[in-house]
Amino acid sequence: MPAITASAPGKIILFGEHAVVYGRPAIAVPVNQVAARAIAIAEPRQPSGTVIIQAPDISLESSLSDLPPDHPLAIAVISVLERLEITRPPAFTLRISSTIPVAAGLGSGAAVSVAIIRVVSAFLGRPLPNEQVSELAYEVEKRYHGTPSGIDNTVITYNMPVYFVRGQPVAIFHVARPFTIVIGDTGIKSPTATAVGDLRKFWQADPIPYERLFDQTGQIAEAARRLIESGRTAELAPLMQDNHRLLQEMGVSSPELDHLVQTAQASGALGAKLSGGGRGGNMIALVDPQQAESVAEALKLAGARSTIITKVGGI
Picture (cartoon, one colour):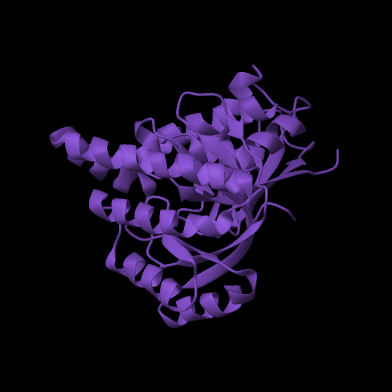
């Protein structure tokens, strides 16, 4: 049996992070310049039921049975076996790699889960449809992140721009006019679960001001969708500024993120904001395509560990 391969892209949230956990809309788009990849290789000489997991990026090589049951890689594999009601699969080795930075707001965990779920189900001859892939990846996210919104697994599974409202059907929307985003990585790892958990404590202690912030953030996401669908992408710039200010008020920005946002604006970006969980990770800047390289270089000079230039919509 030939090796089976599956991959899944990274993602960025354009608008609505954190508020999306509380039922407001958010917009997320895939980032195909980075990806997680999983390969399933049959091991016919091994006893049935043997699953070897190799993840050199984290120096891991282990049998599935030896991994802790709450390990995210184990959860992803087991979720597929349980969904397909397979107790002893044909022996195989699962190799996992990723170019997506960890804990940086680019959806690394969800992308790895999606790639694993796709490759394992395909290897077993019963590839799962997108809806079930996303559902299982969300279950992994819940075990790993506590209270995820569901946006990461959704945009990564469908590899399309997504307008997401928790608990509602997936809304994939049209980008009328492609636009360019520069992503700047602070180099500070910031697990989503920590930022989400801290904000939840603040909200529980004093919900009224946070509900106001979430409402305003949701209104920005709604307005941004209308602009993207009508091709008026330059008008996204002030919405990015407003969204970043609201995230600052929520307490999820950081001096490093604020510095990169200010640098992007000073170097010619139309607008900029943090993206994802905050407290570190990434920021994004909306730029004219001809300005992308110079903005990326300015971010590096200002301390960004790395940058990615991506186009939203089109190829």
